[in-house]
Image (cartoon, rainbow, N blue to C red; front, top):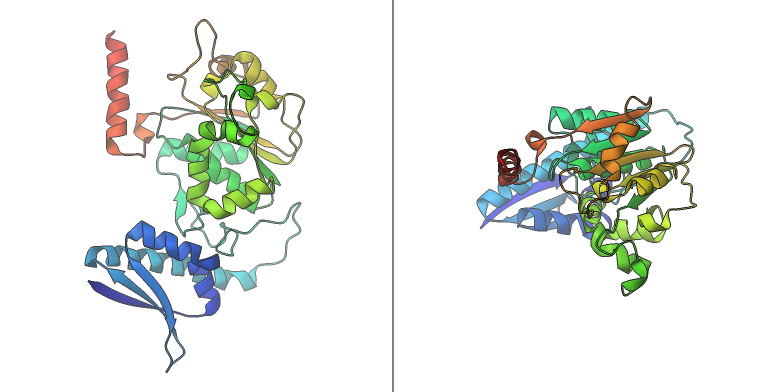
Length: 327
């Protein structure tokens, strides 16, 4: 059993590190497999963070905690020098108490509620994030594990924190239910929940479950099944359509025309994994020709070289491509 201690400079710093109701502390304990406790030295009144566990896990936890403290301290040092700005919308704060974008390295997108900095890992991912940031409509096309959805969620939260949008709209085609959600048990949210789990996972990783549920309840994050989008217009919103290879051409047209003033749209999908029944054409495949060369639209291709999941995922994708070519 190894024990290491880290001095915390202030109660404000402790709150930023541990989060509301110690939610970040519990997450760090789960992530690093250690026990973490904060106490105050009765003689010196210093706040001391104690980390207990196996030697290797404690070392990793200490490194993670110190990186988070460095970010918090850098953000605090920069705060007084900033001039007040008048934005269209006030930035929303993350569970740690800062906006998730203060004091970030130049190549970072956002800092999660758990202190992790999210950034692009490959050249294609960098180009994708740049397109999402600079264009009003971006298509991220590539195989599983390339970060299409995860990075889009990070960009959506960054835009929300910076006050560039007021809400995030999430949608996904429900192919298996034929978009006839009335045949499924439960209310609307319960009906679409199974199809949106991959999106939820990304938000859980960045916001934490508690803040995600709170924002969803307040409709800061709104779930809108594709079948229920007709007739609506979304203004000042970051709109994300996931698994777009399973849209029909008519659905894709309907979705894209929901875009209102001040909104940004990101569409993600893998054109090699459509679940549509032939002879129905994928709306994602057709839109690549329809919007080719249109100003303000970006098509970003990600490949197996951009896979950031388990190393075997890249090998599996490559093997399938090789097998398809040999048929």
